[in-house]
Amino acid sequence: MIQFMNVTIRAGQFALENISLEIPSGCYAVLMGQTGQGKTTILETICGLRGVTSGRILIGGVDMTDWSPSDRGIGYVPQDLALFTTMTVKEHLAFALQLRKQPQAFIRNRTDELANLLGIAPLMDRRIKNLSGGERQRVAIGRALSFHPNVLLLDEPFSALDRSTRKEMYSLVQQLKQTIGVTTIHVTHNEEDAETLADRFYTIDHGKLRITEIKERTLISG
Amino acid sequence: MAVETVRGPSGNASQPRRRSDVWFFVAMGALSSCFVVLIIAMLVADLLFTSFADFKAAILKPEIRFAFTLTVASCTAAAILSLLVATPLGYVLSRYRFPGRGIIDVLVDIPIVLPPLVIGLSLLILFHFPINGWTLENWLRDDVGFGVTYRWPAVVLAQFSVACAFAVRTMRVTFDQIDPRGEDVARTLGCSRAQAFWIVALPQASRGMIAAATVAWARSLGEFGPILVFAGATRMRTEVLSTTVFLELSAGELSAAVAVSLIMVAIAGVVLVLLRLLNGGPAA
Picture 1 (tube, each protein chain N blue to C red):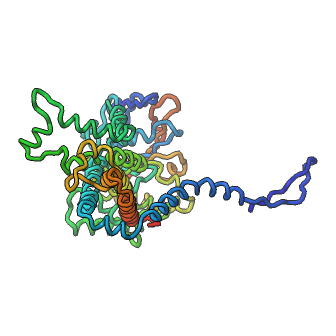
Picture 2: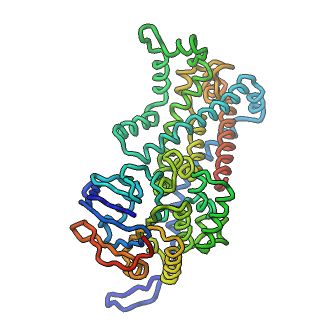
């Protein structure tokens, strides 16, 4: 569960005031809004890359407002993916597990499992520059899921993909929803993303900079 | 060749005409070649001025052999030290905003702007500035057992003081060009800031580090003023090749000075090519 309790975020002239929301465990929430409304800022705040001016953020009932990003256990896929140019696909999938000093056999099993789930098994020894947009997207999602995060944050994950690859990614994400069921916030300005994937659907209002829940569907769990 | 359809005053299309880019390339080539030709001309003049016998005499001289060894060793030491300092400093200046950052940014550039001789003089004053009878040089020599001034460490320190400033600039630009988002995401995956720097940023900066080491090494090779002031020009003790040129010239040995200059050109060429090969780029 993700809870925002009267959170205010200010950065220069930009401000999001007094946001309160609650996303239940296992929910796939889609957050929409015009460019510059602060969608990415909200994701960065949840994963700890940006501090709050006031208010509290709770993940799984634990107040993580002042926690370091490394301690929060949140999988983050930024819009630009931020893949590591010096690493192979396999190294991306093993990255978080090696940091957690998991046994080699466990890492091998987990990376194989993710590679099969994401359909990137034949690409494991390739470097990032040799991958297509859709393949990179899958690697970024796999890297974020590798350590079984409490929460998954996706920032415009399909914005750079063509229509057919986008359809493939919808199928993949729906499959992930069914198999993993991790609480997810998916930021997008594409209504099709929301229509296809959302359990809950939020927008940031123009000018008011607050979040309104406008639609709810059946939750997968929680 | 660009093909353009020319329209008359009435707007009707007339005969297409072909335009040439030849003059563009002639002008650019002529202006660009001025510098390249100047360098080649200087080297050719040096080569024609000296002879194989001069080279042989220079290479066989024990003082020049010592200077050659000290030059290679001190330049390498100064380049390694510069890289050790420039990498974290360049990273901090590139990634963080903190009070005093602007001042540090200016301070780092001072050795680039100042005449090198002033750097040597400042080092000399720093090591011999008395505070209640205590000086840094006396403390290092008497208590630590590692005197600096007019010894080989002074050569390395004089080279480092200037070379490091250039290495910091190079590393700063290197980290500016690496997207910090990778380090941000690494932190969400479980990295501390130190791990994000070590595992994610540093491997991406490898080419920049080689470039910084190259700049520092080359700059150290050409250093003369601060070495003369801070380390002196004592034969078989603090003499590097740049001081050899000065000493030979002072003694009226123009041929030897030119021969040593060409040896320096050869060393610089070998090191630059090796570093470029290491960098994965074309050697020529």
